[in-house]
Image (tube, rainbow, N blue to C red; front, side):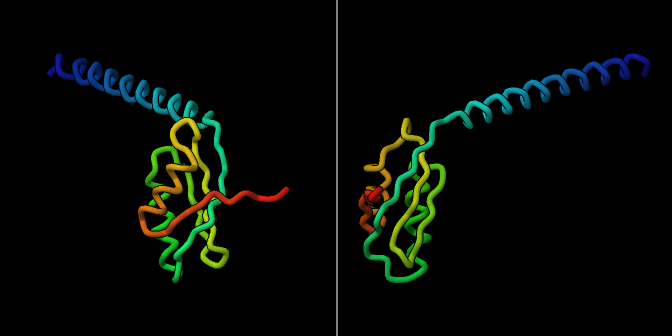
Length: 111
């Protein structure tokens, strides 16, 4: 019995240290991810006939690797997308919506 207690303490310390290192690595990964340069793009979306269409467009766009967030506006027939341009492009995002049945074109805003 006297040998079991030090063994339990040793294993507990090893598990705690491993958990701490994993948490530290995860925190570093999150910080690294937050340093990504984000780009915004606005797309005109065709063929949206009901408010449920926005879900399909949003999911199609957000499934593109590199897309951080997509917000679709049914009334104005546009999608605003935040993405990491080192992982994807406006062309790939538009293609995802188009393949889902809702053709998307990059909307150039006048200054």
